[in-house]
Amino acid sequence: MRLREAIQFLGRGPALHWSRLNRIAGLPGFACYNSAFSVIENLLYGRRIRQTELTAPPIFVLGMWRSGTTLLHSLLTRDPQHTSPTMYRTLFPWHFLTTEKFVSSATGWLIPKSRPMDNVPMSWEAPQEDDVALCIMTLLSPYMLMANPRNLDAHWKYLDLKRLSDTELQNWKNSLNLLLKKITIRDQKRIVLKSPPHTFRIPLLLDMFPDAKFVYIHRNPYNVFRSAVHLRKTAVAENCLGLPQNVNIERDMLDTCKFAYECYGRDRQLIPEGNLHEVRFENLEVDPIGEMEKVYDGLSLPGFDALADILRPELAELRRYKKNRFKNDPEWMGAVYDELRDEFEQNGYPSPFEELEASAA
View 1 (spheres, rainbow, N blue to C red):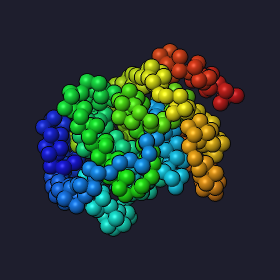
View 2: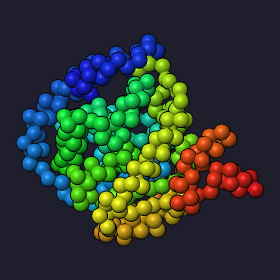
View 3: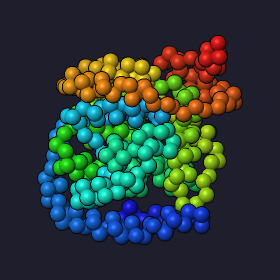
View 4: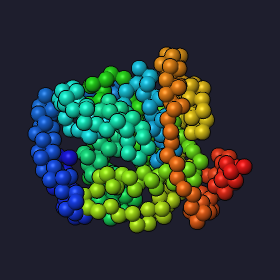
């Protein structure tokens, strides 16, 4: 955050606790650093940014958290024709054109080797969610919940953005366009964007990018639910400035799943024919190259053969990845199936109880 956004954030009254003093104490320094280099970057690149046009309409990866969006995003960005926001670009969106090369090379050793919630490899260059950058630039993101977990109303307001004021919405749109133009300056390639909140925003994204391509990935809803609960708890613990609050996370996450499936089911018909492809995570996990070929065919994307040549030597590493394992809770198994039954049946997933019986057989 810059100084302005940091003041706005603290003005919302997030819970603070002395045990998080290292994070709280670092805010003013980072805010001043980001503000100063934001001014420098605007002086150096402002005119060029304003004159930049995107190389091609973006590709959006849609899907509920923990449904396989990270894997799909990673595979799409292995294509040398594509680029994406990286971890550095999303954490320092105001000045990455100016600072990325030096700072990322000097501090790469500080980055943990894997993400705490799912063991996915991390680096400054790893593909990252653009909503992280939008959170930092605008504070208009459901990810504000990670720093201020008691503000659940903001989480819901920032999912589909329909309750934003005209000024807030224009700020959000301007910030996304700014981010994409800056990425285009760095890499003259088609940008692949992955943020689960975009699943709630299809009409808005089509209004901004009418020719955008969309890939939607789905997974067994119960596995999505319990992994998303774990993600929320881990992300709050890693980012909040007060003591982590895990009250009613399961209920809120189930409601979020319902809303995500409702939004996608309602809005998918708005996407022009040939610009949407759907992927089943369980198939992508088993046959990534075969499923990626279907994505490229379905969206009429060029260059699949080159991508396949890149992915083949990496298949063994992909298959070595170990997913988290979670204990089953019969109460939530029943609730998830009852409330998301349409999603289970529409995509041919067994109920959690049937799957448990099959795995025990």
